[in-house]
Length: 131
Image 1: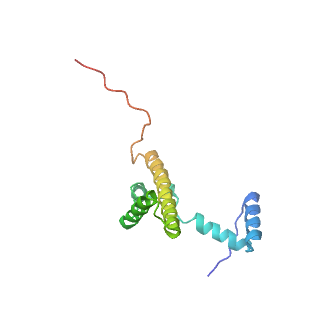
Image 2: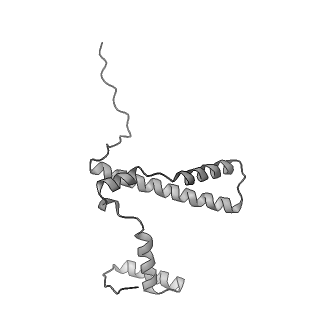
Image 3: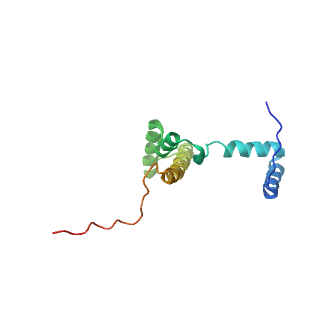
């Protein structure tokens, strides 16, 4: 089911959607709906509650996915991957990297809310020496 809505969009965005629609032989509506689906797949971190945000900060790959990734990485080091396995490794690495970026973004929001401590890239000064 679809519903008609009216939105105001910047001219540049409209041009980008039109160009993509022409290139892909799709309608303007189809392209825009697809972009919204893809872009809206993950909730906006700033809008999450504290517990949900911390869950994203602590997120990890499923154990089975981690095992598969480790196996493929090891076999890749040995030069033993076929084309299908290489594509799977690429997909898993993309997922892994995307997860790291999302966790870093979530951590930034969590720090700004005071939910997690801030990390310093400089080494703290040692405590003063006392005899």
